[in-house]
Amino acid sequence: MSISCGLEQLAAHQAIHTSVTADLDAAMRLLHVSMRSGSHNEAYELAGVIVTIWTERELWHVHTEEAALYRHIPAMAPLQRDHDLMEQWVCEARSALEREGQVSAFVLSRLEALAALLHTHNQEELRQLRLSLHDPL
Ligand SMILES: [Fe+2]
Ligand SMILES: [Fe+2]
Image (cartoon, rainbow, N blue to C red; front, side, top):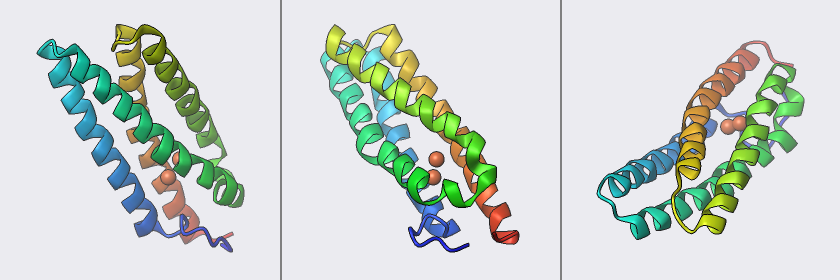
């Protein structure tokens, strides 16, 4: 595989996933605690942090993959749909958060859906990367 973005390196790619998901999972746990305790302002701030992590770290990662990795590994093409959903749901969560000024049921549902999608997406992406390393293009 003649890719030089670093994402073709399994360990390096996995480390990026681990770092982003650990921070997102920790922030989601804090968000749930805030929601349960009725700390609405804190929950609002945390939701903003989560949207920022998604935008500045995960979506940045996604764009790099699309530009430099996916086009070299055709088996990854179906995973593009996950990236599209991530973009859409992050945009919807950010817009609703700004519009409503609180963590509504809709915002929470989008953030939870994103968290679930991220884990399954990352697992499948690394599985495809492992397969491609055994069967280089
Ligand atoms: Fe991805
Ligand atoms: Fe990735």
